[in-house]
Length: 194
Image (cartoon, rainbow, N blue to C red; front, side):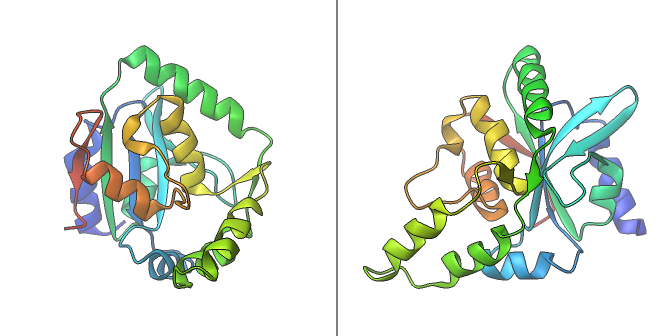
């Protein structure tokens, strides 16, 4: 963890509560590809939860297991924490649901190439049916990182995160929706993308 990352994480650690969401500009070899494909600064998303004295983050990733928030933020170039303005009991119930939902599910390995194709195709009357067809090809028994985050957010009935036809819950989409929220459902607790 770099000194700068350590300092940024210290700023926000005490405020990261169960049920908040973290979005990062990751440092993995896939991160720049995801950012390029989605024209975004953000490449990954996870749900924050606490376990005794540890702050963890849960996402559908290749290893499909929780990571320490300090590790996730410390290895990210930038990160953002989204506060979910819901009662604690609703957040706890949603976390319980998403952790049991994730058990036994697999990572959607085709998500990245499919998203690249969907986002890099121009949007016109020829490509719209192709994009729609590709969206239906995602395996419903598998998820990718922000798809799991999206399912968590929608389990809380947050209007901010309602998908419109043709949209995909990418890290960029989640970040923009949270940043532009005006109804008070969510707020940006920390954001060093700007």
